[in-house]
Length: 186
Image (cartoon, rainbow, N blue to C red; front, side, top):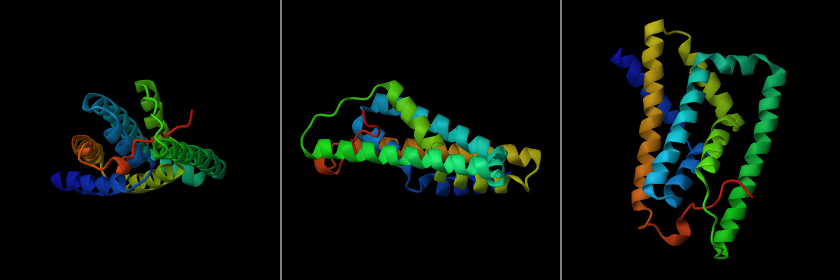
């Protein structure tokens, strides 16, 4: 069973560590919040990543793959979310470049943002859904639970590690290299 757990952990670590909207959101959280708030937001990120991974592992990817209307809907709506989020990042970066003080985001905004970057990203939905759903097929019931535990713990290790590392080192980073931009335009 340890081999099943380690296999899941390594595969999930490879999936979650690829740079995407969720990681940019996590970097932004770590660099722009005090440690206590960053850890709360980390909980939101991990919660939604765990939910996404679990539904993907249980077969959401096959549902998307088999239903053309659902797949087009996910890609269309998700594409709009990605464009909206990118616009927010560009606006936030422009405000920072011109010295405008950024408005602090509430926990509710961080919660919503964590949900959107997890479930509003078509690439994450499709890649995670297809990959984890396919990996579930050859496993027995007991192996599936151990595999899912490996996936969930890899997510926790990754997001906790980057949140702690970036938050603790943020004062040493040059002011111009911070990702402290707002993800969602007002």
